[in-house]
Amino acid sequence: MTDPTRLTAAQTAAAIASGTLTAVEVAEAHLARIEAVDEKVNAFLHVDREGALARARAVDEKRERGEKLGPLAGVPLALKDIFTTEGVPTTVGSRILEGWLPPYDATLVQRLRDADIVVLGKANMDEFAMGSSTENSAYGPTGNPWDLTRIPGGSGGGSAAALAAYEAPLAIGTDTGGSIRQPAAMTGTVGVKPTYGAVSRYGMVAFSSSLDQGGPCARTVLDAALLHEAIAGHDPLDSTSIDRPVPPVVEAARSADVKGLRVGVVKEFAGEGYQAGVMQRFTESVELLRELGAEVTEISCPSFDKALAAYYLIAPSECSSNLARFDAMRYGLRVGDDGTRSAEEVTALTREAGFGAEVKRRIMLGTYALSSGYYDAYYGSAQKVRTLITRDFEKAFEQVDVLVSPTSPTTAFPIGERADDPMAMYLADLCTIPTNLAGNAAMSLPCGLAPEDGLPVGLQIIAPAMADDRLYRVGAAVEAALTARWGHPLLEEAPAL
Amino acid sequence: MPGITREEVAHLARLSRLELKDEELDHFAGQLDVIIGAVARVSDVADEDVPPTSHPLPLTNVMRADEVRPSLTPEQALSGAPAQEQQRFKVPQILGED
Image 1 (spheres, rainbow over the protein chains, first blue to last red):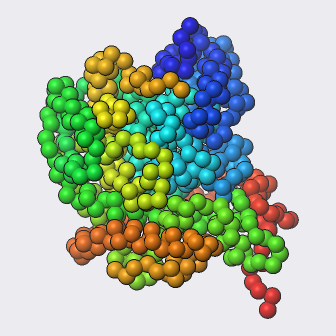
Image 2: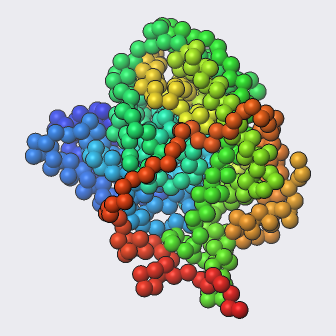
Image 3: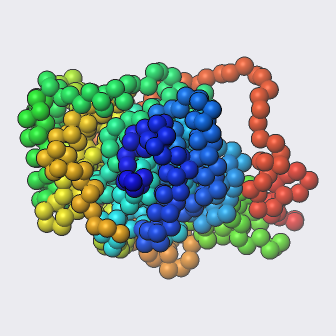
């Protein structure tokens, strides 16, 4: 019998619907896989064994009663630990929320339940989603299943690693500056940042509210599309949620046709700092798109070279405000409350003890950027850069249907290599950040291994806001052509754990 | 742009409600200086013709009908609190005794 952990989400759902496998068998196989390999990978912060099995039993009972099952019924999923789950620990990778049991579910969690998806547990992440390597988790780094001494990307490293280690066929990530796409690139998986506002942020712990976006992670483009449809859509509980129909992403993934599609290569995403093997695989992907019938042109987005600087002012500014709620009064850790100290002192001692270095760094950076006297020079100017980047995208999308670039300038780097050099770390998100600033949609999918280190390279596809379906059409076409060329999915080349 | 001094980091830490340790002050002073130096280039675009964008969506205030809806019970809302008393969050003293 086929090992259930090796199936795609679409295959798993079909096997459960037809009765070849039960949802309980599928859940048990993944729980056993987690038990066997997660000590090495550290993709999960919390495994909800009982909850997952109860959910799976409910799916099997539903099928026995002859009720119609949804397209992903019974499929297991790893949920980034940034979404609140009622009665199940939610830490956001931070000590400050260690042991906290939320009293409510995020809207996205409710939608996963409505779709009969089986949540296996909470995936590891950089603390408060701040990082590009998952080294900033208070609960230890996640290893990259391709090479456990390397980072799996961040901040959604746990979600991506769970997929690459065959611990789950689906995962949920969040992308503030690239935290879905960059880990996808580093682990040879697929990650999508939907249009800003497409997936509810209610119950998703806020880092930078104008940039944060939840989205699907999977091993195939079709699986990502199925998950996208399950989680997207208007939510009255989120004032930034878009009240428009979800683009037909599953249909697009099945059509996989790029004939006549206009593809723009972003000229600014090349040059110094880009690994040779990354550029080689990227250039081959562009050539492949041409062979598949796309019209390829070069597009210049001159303001993109200031995107990283704008991001590292806007994200910390919003984070310094959002994280003010962690004040030791209403939830989480409290340190130093010995009856002699004031509330203000207890807050400061608690935040010192509960937050890690990257979080403190960004809170202070944001406090600085927003302070009187510096506001116009830093935060104000960054918001102007944001306007210019949005204009660059608008101009580009008058000429082409999608833009492409490498997802990340390099492949996965060794754990610890950039730990003391924040600027070097920040460069990992160079290609992904403009999309967050403008709010449009983007995907990363595997496009080969870099010859010099044998590690996965990601191809980034960028589409206008609310044209998420274009990502899936292009992504599925590239995936089909590359898989045919390789003779198997790229992930099968990863070493056994 | 002025360099970030240890004293400035201490001031930022106070504003940020972070009781930093001495060694952290030195460490962050160096790092924040480098980061701020690198991000300062955004001011090159300080053109008055460019309007700032604070959010990717054009947000407008939405009013809803003032109706009672289901919400958390007091027990649920207080369930994660470090300390509680008489159905309230119990906090350390906020005002001095004098």
